[in-house]
Amino acid sequence: MKTLRFGIEIETVGQTRAKVARAIQRVVGGEAFHFGGAYDAWHVTDSRGRTWKVVRDASLSGPGSRKAEVVSPILRYEDMDELQEVVRAVRRAGAKVDSSTGIHIHVDAAPFDAKKLANLVKIINKQEALIERALGIADSRKARWCKSVCQDFLQKIEREKPKTLEALNEAWYGRYNPHPQHYHGSRYHGLNLHNVWFRGTVEFRWFNGTLHAGKVKAYIQFCLALAAKALKARSAKSAKRELKPESSKYDFRVFLLGLGLIGDEFKTARLHLLANLSGSSAWKNGRQDRRAA
Image: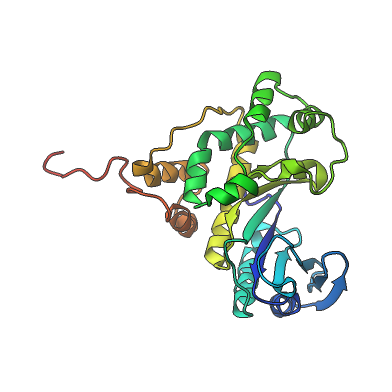
């Protein structure tokens, strides 16, 4: 998972794009300037020549001048500490999140072929109810911005077993679509494969808006671990796992450990990812009385 390149989009409200851009510049160095264009963007060219963007997003709440979506450049795992400092700087600059904001994480699609992408779809479909509960996704967001895996698409890949990205493209769009448009309706899924053909990334759209640097890191680690699992797996099963709320914390912890998020390095990630769930992370059915045991 640490070899995969990634990027992140962090939606914020309550502060101008200029001030958000200058907050980023204080962390990454380089130059901040008003780029303009359709998204009234600010660009920050950092000390390594990479461009961080702060753009307007019409879907966010509040005045248009205070809608600021931070779009990172292509990052590597060793950039995580700097990214966390960027998140903290944006928060200190006065940016906020609300129910209209979210986080989108992109993982480089280059290592994936059709089979590995199908593995990813199946892994997520199997655990999707648990993932959605763990991430605390509101029903309104699931209905519009991060829908569950399309069952028609899943049935197609189960039945047809696409061998090429072109065949997978046809299954995703319903027809072969080599040049998809940016705002194609199929993009609004928690797992968005539209971006494989539009931008060259696998996009994960589940996450509620946050400017908590630890949560941001946990979300990225989770996506990278999912991607790595799909890349390594020879095959995957897609049958949905029944959600049991009373043991959901234990079940999700087991899932995270199966993804490789094991040990002290990922202790904080597990803490954040398990926080919304019920039950005990160590005992599936609650801790038994020792004498009765």
